Every structure is written in structure tokens, then in C-alpha cells.
Image (tube, rainbow, N blue to C red; front, side, top):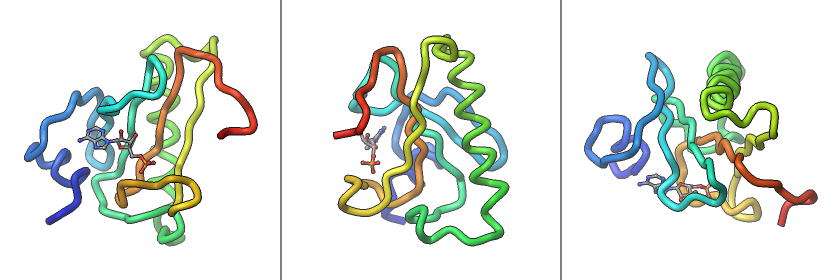
Length: 113
Ligand code: AMP
């Protein structure tokens, strides 16, 4: 198993875990791009959003709901936060196990860089 996020799920690679349930794990990004930068991932190894199947709809919905809950716990609901999936090279995807970025704690620009 070569996937680093699968290794975080099994505990083979350490991470600052902040949430886990039967389907989802969340941990702090090792190279934070904002005061709060958390990655929310499914335990199921799916390489990219464009590989998702109709049967994954519930899982993806739950990733967003976990993002909402963590944002609340981190105190960034009122100030604002961003949820992002990067898909393939133009978006800068570096790890091929889908992950929802939760970013907050500062103001972000739009359009994104
Ligand atoms: P992406 O560019 O969307 O594929 O994002 C991958 C993210 O994973 C980047 O923000 C990295 O900083 C983060 N990352 C890579 N390795 C680790 C790790 N071992 N623990 C936590 N975050 C990681």
C-alpha cells in the first residue's frame, strides 16, 4: 500500500487526528496554508473526485457535513471558511486519495490563485 493517506488511516504514518468515524478521518495538514487547515478524507481509497461513482454520493455528502461540524468546533463558522477538492494537475492535486480541505482563520481571495 503506497498511499500516504491510507497509511495515516492505519496509523502507519502519524498525523494530528481530530475526527474519526466508521467512514471518515480528519487531521491537520502538515503544511498549513491558513491558521486552520484540516484534511477530511474517506477511509475508502478513491483517487480523485473524477473517479467517484454514484454510490459514493452519501460518502461525499458526509465529508462536507464533517467539514461543517469541524468548522463549528474550530470557531470559524461565523468568520468564514473554505472547503476545496483539488482534482488532477491544473488544480494542484498532489495526493491521490480524495481529501476535502477545510481552510479558515484568515480572509481568502477570489478568484483563487
Ligand atoms: P492536494 O494538493 O489537494 O493533493 O493536497 C495535499 C495536501 O496534503 C497538501 O496540503 C499537503 O500539505 C498535505 N499532506 C501531505 N502529506 C501529509 C501528511 N503526511 N500529513 C498531513 N498532511 C499532508
